[in-house]
Image (cartoon, rainbow, N blue to C red; front, side):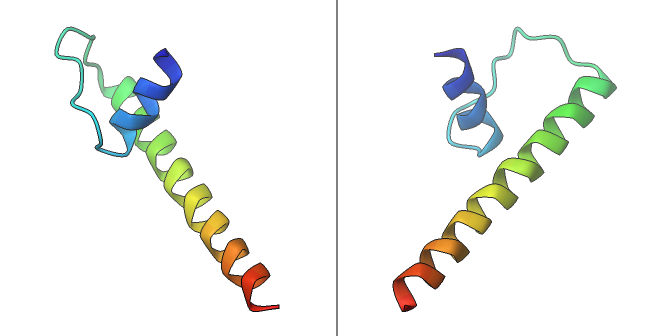
Length: 54
């Protein structure tokens, strides 16, 4: 369940683990992952709207 927990943290659904290490580079990585997940969800919504219109 670690993957689902991480995705929930990226999307601000679940609180972050206070015991995990905090470095600048991990923060950058999580930021890029957050952006990619949000863009992927937006793309899925756009595809679903286009499919439902036809």
